[in-house]
Amino acid sequence: MDAGMISQIALWIVVCVLSLLVFALMRQIGVLNERVFPAGALMTTNGPSVGEAIPVGTYTSLGNTAVVIGGMQNQDTLLLFVSPACPVCKTLLPYVQSVAKAENSSTQIILASDAENDQEQEQHRQFIKQYHLPAAQYLLSRPLGLAFRVEKLPFAVIIDSRGILRAKGMVNSREHLESLFEAQTRGVASLQDYLLSQR
Amino acid sequence: MSISLALRLFLATLFARAAWHKLSQHSSFQAELSAYRLLPVSFTLPAVYGLAITEIFCTLGLLFFNTAIVVAMTLLVIYGLAIAINLWRGNRHIDCGCASWLSPRKSLGWALVLRNFLLALLAFICLSLPTPASISTGNVLFALLIAFTLWLLYESIEQVMSNAQQYTQWKKQFSSRSMH
Image (cartoon, rainbow over the protein chains, first blue to last red):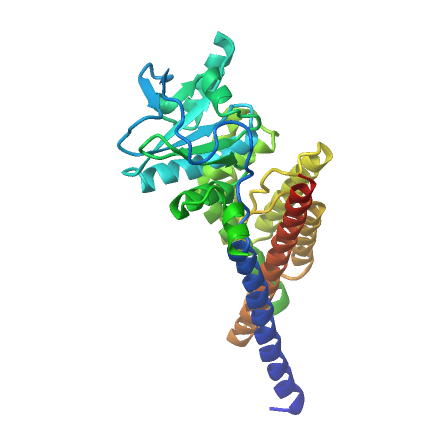
């Protein structure tokens, strides 16, 4: 083996190790970004505030079943306001479905929206068909949206089994929705509040 | 030629991962695809499987025949155009739907368009190099080494891109909070 060959091999080893290092560093920065500073769901100041009991209401689902929101329940409720016309909502649906499967014993998932006429109602029916959503957990109610002062979609609300509002906020991504669950388990209003209390 | 083989291996890895992403998370990819608003709603699910099958064809074919390279190039250009069209429409905030090994999801940007065209260019370079017909074990090992390094660098660039997006998001969050 001549010197050229040896240096070639040595250089290749160095290049490989360096690329591994660069990748590991980039990855660490990415992980730090995600862990250290989670992007919390955007809180709104309107509507019922966290810690308050929400007004109890009975609503009719698209599957013609009665759904009670608020009051004593045997599990927590995730109320997610969506619309067929909102692309971000659609990207959240697979995640919501996986949460429904993973936490089926502790959290019931209710999707909510509103329809002004029959034509819109038909759009909602196609929407739940396309994304395989359970009709019994899909509500069309304008008063429900008004009660939580929903302005922008997708908007998520977590209500505990005693009918108390635990977390709420606009959720643009899976991370936002996760932050709401995180806020609920930590017993804080939002992750922003948690971070502020830590400083 | 080990360079040609290395480039083919590298591209095959990317397509394998993309196909895996589409098949393993087809419902979320379907949602991402419909957010691009390029296809009628009823076509999105067949499109997901169509794309996945084409990508599997590219993965397997890239090492052996040039047709697969042409298909791969076309796919890359189509994805690039799809992103560019949505950028022109002002749809910056949709998820790009591009599979990444570890890095978090990315929204659209011109950097992604550039990335796709550079990858297409790489595929084009493969076309002009001779096909790897019968090569020695040493050359294969060397090609694997190059492909592995290329892939690591590619993943690093992806990660840098998603890190950069996260920083801009934070900046926005902070500035909007200080205004309140």
